[in-house]
Image (cartoon, rainbow, N blue to C red; front, side, top):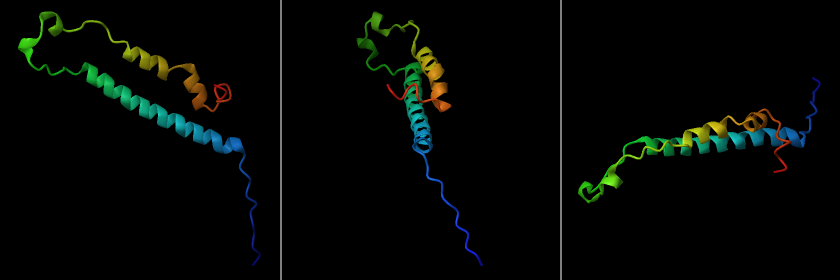
Length: 96
């Protein structure tokens, strides 16, 4: 029986770097999103107020200023460069 050997193709540098870069970006975004979700959740949950009798009326009123965090998340996550990097076009951003 003849033994058939397949020649293993030598992997190019880009064949190794691109999947690793995608995994690294995915890990970064998952890590970032988990922290963002935690802080958003923390900011929207009602806070426990200790010693209510010591608070002044101005400190106890609810802050009505709108939060910019959701808009920051939308801007960062849906930025066109994120899609380009995810699709493998990291050449533009690798020199940063």
